[in-house]
Image (cartoon, rainbow, N blue to C red; front, side):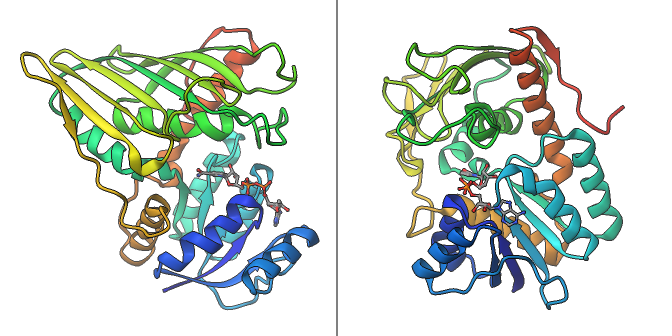
Length: 335
Ligand SMILES: NC(=O)c1ccc[n+]([C@@H]2O[C@H](COP(=O)([O-])OP(=O)(O)OC[C@H]3O[C@@H](n4cnc5c(N)ncnc54)[C@H](O)[C@@H]3O)[C@@H](O)[C@H]2O)c1
């Protein structure tokens, strides 16, 4: 068991503590931390577990699970690695490319594990789609759509709430996981008339991939149309067929359909994730983390592997800021 202190007890951090950790025997939570006294009080009232204002680095534990807002990801990861602790970090990793490289190198130089929880990689539909892609030949185009109506939530312009950093961070990572690395991004913001001007809630983008395929991407958290699954709705076109998936908003209700030239469309069943609480994707992240800590197994969630996702996010942000300029993706640390 990896004795772990969890830092960050907001909505998502609490969800980790209440729904994920009980299903993840690889981690033993030995402490909970949040700087906000109100959050600590709410957390203790809900769970009965005590929560501290700061991490006691002199205590006996192996790892830190960082579920804070984005600004604290980098500083906390650095402190933890310097204190000899493994780190499992919520996405996005960090928006500072120099910091990302520094943390990756710090972890590697100390023989510590640094993983970013890109949990969508472990959605069952994603695994089925990845397998199906082997049958459709060279991929030429993908159309990816994410729609949800989040206007009822308190949303603001910061990366802690923007659709780019909160949702596209997953979808761009899935493009890298399923298709290929991204070479360049062109992104345009749009908004429904009633959305606050400062809020980045909707944008469309074109991603150019290594090998020449194009991804047409669109995301909105103020959409009035049918809600998509968290991983989005995908249509991937290859030379020998197509793969598509959608669903009724829940992770485990997705359907993957495979089209092959000359054959009727085939709907491939997607097994429900092996989790009572429907958190099988994050349980799988924890398993990956444990394998990396105990067996030194390489993980596709490693901080180093995630540098490419950070780079796509930064390129998209740059393009949005520059009114749709084409921005080449530069992976930090690769010169
Ligand atoms: N993987 C996913 O699908 C997914 C879904 C939702 C959120 N997230 C990620 O989870 C993280 C948390 O999201 P949230 O919605 O719970 O945010 P939130 O704003 O509700 O909570 C963040 C918490 O972090 C605490 N915090 C900030 N800095 C701290 C520090 N230095 N030390 C201790 N505590 C600190 C805040 O007091 C707050 O309680 C974000 O990184 C977000 O991107 C991931």
